[in-house]
Amino acid sequence: MKYDIAVIGGSLGGVQAALSAAKENKKVYMCEQSDWVGGQLTSQAVPPDENKWIEEQGGTKTYHEFRKAVRDYYRALPEFNPEVAKTENFCPGNSWVSRIAHEPVVAVKILDDMLAPYIEDGRIELDYETVAVDSTVENDIIKAVTVKNLNTGEEKVIEAEYFLDATDLGDLLPVVGAEFRTGAESKAMTGEPEAADEADPEDLQAITWVAALEMLPEDSDYVPEKPEKYDYYASIDVPHCDCRLLSWYTNKLQGPGTRRLGMFDGEGNDPASKGLWNYRRIIDTPNYTDGRNEVTLLNWPQNDYWMGNIFDDSDAETHLQRARELTLCAVYWLQTEALRADGGKGYKVRLRPDIMGTEDGLAKMPYIRESRRIIAKRLICEQEIVRDFAEKPLMVEDSVGVGHYSMDLHMTTKSHNHFMRKTWPFEIPLSAMIPVRLKNLIPACKNIGCTHLTGGCYRLHPIEWNIGEVAGYIASYCMDKRFTPAELLEKEVASFQAFLEEKGVQLHWDFSRMEL
Image (cartoon, rainbow, N blue to C red):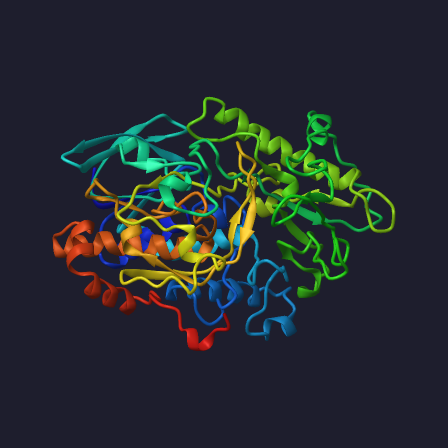
């Protein structure tokens, strides 16, 4: 079957890639491994992690339209508090890590609504529960990719002018024989001050299998069931930290040592500490008139799975299962053994399957922090964006977007490295999206030319959205101009940037409206 552009992976970036290409009247094929599009926002159940200027800038026009659609959805609910609805920039869940924390089922509805007109008129064809398994490549040009339905086993061959890898793990890269890296680079490879002394492609950031938890009334008679492997997971010690994994203690954000977390505000290391319950809360009782119970998403240090990798590993399926087991055990610990401020143990919480679209209340897919990454024309390195090493924000001549987040490295699977570093606001270089060899492959997710370290800040929602949206525009623009992305980089960056700005892509930060 022939298309203009094939988007392999229905991640957050994948959805935007398909949409931007369809808006340019291209015939688009998209496939997605799960039965929900949206990746980290939906099937992985992670509310938007955003920059602190997001209400005014720091995202594409379409990303801001999505944020408005989320708030409009809640405003339209009869049960939503009308006083809250009047507030311009309310957060549906009143979380402290996201300015717009909301339910995954709401997010996927909005993304589906965005796709619907283009699916209906035939510009986008979407296959769920489908993955890439083979390819035909000639003279550094991908001619076709074979995709397989995970339920029926049916295969079909997709021919296209351009192929975009929008999977959360960079799954298309090995299928088409692209040059890519995984895991930790060495100092010699990147010049990064905090890179490993020796490269280790198996040293990847932890995954997390997120769960939706509802806070029940104190008089609830709900009795949780103990997971079969609970005693095993409850006995695991955290590396570099004198504490158990299932406890209120974890590593310090910087350097060795232990810090205490708490369920609610003020229960951690100091009275000003914020609680984990409202960290990623998506339903806050005062925001409703019907008294509904609060719901949060469990994406905490206690259920980070750093015990193994889920790709390019013979035990990948085992690690996926163990990540699920760990989360279920973390839930049981919270229900039965977690120390409360009043001296008691356990909280009245239970899983909420309806919010996740699953039978057990766990997300459809694990949260992926680190992908295979293309070897690109340009590599984005730590010393360019971290405040300790760079004197000013990263600004590039070939910018195709902006972003900002701390460089957040969750505990890794081999070295157990972890830290968080403050960064400058940065830009997304077009050259980091152009592979060194293949002429019609474009990354559209977490798989651009960043490193093990810088991927820790280029992976966030508005940045992935920006990357995906631009990937679709790169393919469309190159088709219309009849040159390759590499030729675009060499010949026509300024014209392409003007094109992107017309589409609502912010290329540079407006520092006049920011406190750095």
